[in-house]
Length: 134
Image (cartoon, rainbow, N blue to C red; front, side):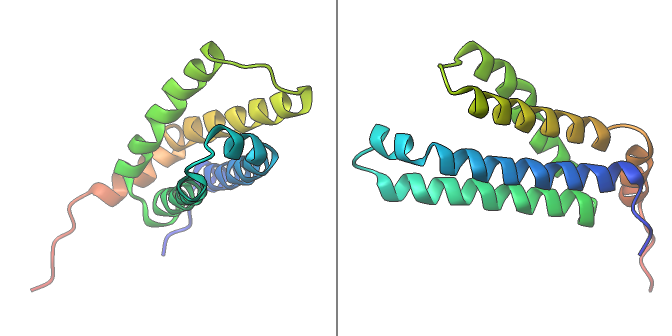
């Protein structure tokens, strides 16, 4: 197996950091989520867990399996999600706001890294057609 480029390694580190931040943020707002959805506690729990598991799967597919299409799937939620969140911002404690900004920053930088520099060649090499042995 080829050595992964530095941009891919940093992408993976930052995205796992973002997942940890997501877990912390979800734990911090858990009671509010449950109060806002009193009749669907199970669905909220399952949705939250599936979201985190999906994030981990996508990070693994991009960083370890070179799946370029997955990095394109990861891009729109960040590109459109951050401005949308800013437009619909509701008052939160300063500590929570700081964690949210750190979460956004980690995701934005990670996705920038995975589309630039030595990551581009790494994904291009994977998509090159390899002849099959007879």
